Every structure is written in C-alpha cells, then in structure tokens.
Image 1 (cartoon, rainbow, N blue to C red):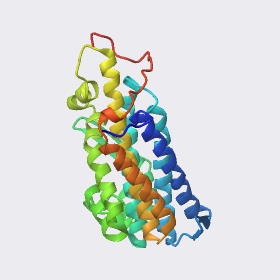
Image 2: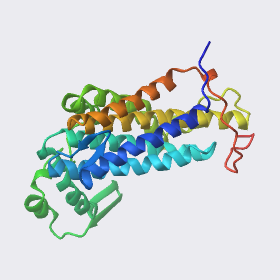
Image 3: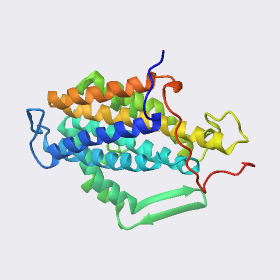
Length: 297
C-alpha cells in the first residue's frame, strides 16, 4: 500500500524550499558577515576574496528568485508562465555561483572585471540587422578603451566572463567540489533549462507546452489549471535541486560537515517526494483566478 502524504505535492515542495532557504541564508551569512555555529560546528568561510564576493553575489540573487517562485507556486493558471524565466535565472545563478566558488581566483577575478567591461559595453554597442541597425556609443574611441582598459576581453570569443558553456561549468563543479554538487546542478539544468528557453524566447513550442502540458481535457479550464500546478511542481523540483547543488558545493568545498549532512537530508526528502506516485498526495485546492483562459482557449 502506497504511503500517504498529508499535503499536496506543491505545498510539500514549498515547505522544503523554505527549509532550504534557511541553509542558503546560513551560507550567505558565513560568506558575507563572518563565522557562525551550526549543530556544534564553527563555520568559517575559507574562500579567497574574489571567489567569495562574486559567488555570494550570484547566490543571493538566486535566493531572491526562489522567494518569487514560492509566491507564484501559490497560484494556478496564467501566472505560472512567468515562473519559467525566474526559474531559469535561479538555476543558472546557482550553477554560476557554484562554479565560481569552486574554481581558482583567476576565474573569479575575471568575472569581477567583467562587471565593469559589460557596463561599458552596454553603452558602446551595435545591434540590429542591415538597415535596421542602431549604434550606441558613449566612448569616442572604444577600440582604444578595450585595448587599454579591458585587454582580457579583446579579440574574438573573449567578450564573456567565461568561455565554458553551462554543462562544462557543471562538470568543473563536480570535479572540484564533489559529485553530489555536480549531479544536482546537472539535474536542475536538464529539468528546466531548455524548456524555459522555449518559453522565454516565445517559441511556438513554448506557448503550446504551457497551455497543454499535463492537460487531458483541452476544453476544461479546471484541467488547464491543474496542469499548471504540475508545471509549478516540476519547476520547484528543478530549482530545489539547483539550490541543493550550490549548498553542497559551498559546504563540501570548505569541509563544513554538519550543514552538509543537513542539506543531504533535505535532498533525500526531495528525491523521496519525486518517487511517490500522484495518488500519494491530496489534490491541490483550486484557487479561482481572473487569469484563467476562457473555454474557447
């Protein structure tokens, strides 16, 4: 006989996310404010300054996106679509934060220098195609500025903070900060990355997926709303996996054993929820919304 859960899956995931957020706050506190005690262990950040600064910046942004996703997860219907770009940002921020804390100081220092370069480039660029092109320029001699002020970003293929693609960054996290961190980030990447791209870029498949995924009766508003709950569940699975990946990288890279073990228990709970059949959960309550599509949609 299947085990029965007390809460709908979406609510169980929200509760798990809130617990994970507490461990993220602990990691950010250690990295930005100083030592802290957890379960009898004194936790002191040992990351070099550049790695600490830039990885903390990204992890903090990812954590703020998780808070936005928790609010969206209370809703059903049309508002759920906006969870995709937020989830993509959170997952990629957790990946990049993990990569930057795992790699050496040179990689992190380049990422910090990229901030000034990208700010300058934003006001000195050309965009468009053919006669539909616009040039923005605040610098009278951009070539000289790049050569003198930003030489590491000069040349073809050198205009980014890293030359590694996302899967390669995840691989480096696994190599440098442990297989648990790398595998959890990879799972998050596979769950949401390409699908969110379809939605973000307004592709026909992205639109179709949002309106039809997990929907059996295409003429039913309630079926559509239930389908968006399933999408929210999948999004939270991905983001929670990414958060666990970052926390595993942060704690394992610095040999912080007590919080690492606690985060491992949270991830085990996430896996356990994922393995349960839908019949193990109560149905999520229907929440009326003015944003539900009409019957004709």
